Image (cartoon, rainbow, N blue to C red; front, side, top):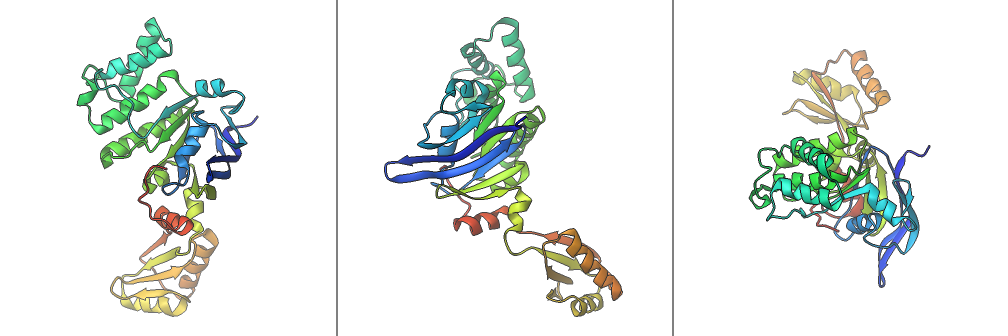
Length: 313
């Protein structure tokens, strides 16, 4: 049985003579969080719009929730939920009324309608503000309500297009927790974000899109290992220990003020064991050992040549 929630092969999209998607391929496992990163104009939102049937691809194939995107668009729409960059709530309605409206649109009636709306208000911490107009909600509350509205139909796959843009750190982390809870329920998340920390914290797999092509894909750790700069940091309590370590460990960079020795290496088990064995052989004790790798900002810049302050693409 195929466990992929989304499979994309050779997807292409152009506007006139401008190619936006140039034959991209990826697969997303059901119940996982997949993040698509890319600089402004890379094609992130175009990818989301194609996979959610808002745009028609010029070439390639895609299956979403087991349905062919080209021949079964209605089945795809029935299986997905979409939360865009800007909250699609009605400010004139209360939080509860916004959810009730979505329930009505999807023909939920009576006890089921009441159960679904009440459950979502509770899950998203909106019970106390349920009967207040959405216009009075904070940015974080509006995003929660927007996502709650997306979940009225219990979609198998949820597309989140930069869902935390403009939120304060506390609201952003609150939404992260909700996203994690969704995957624990088996929901698949397709996330685009301008916050690399967000992808690092949430995504099981990350794909970096640049100029219409996937230039790298893997876990956050996989991507970080592709970039030079990984090292082991040894901290010592005494200058004499630091000096001794610098003598026996080749290639280390010594910092007498911080009492540290920086040793180039990817921090895998074999390398780390060899380093510690060499120190032990010469009776040198480190007070602290830590592994340092490039962060996703370094990865993003190295792969795309662009800064991480990207806009919607």
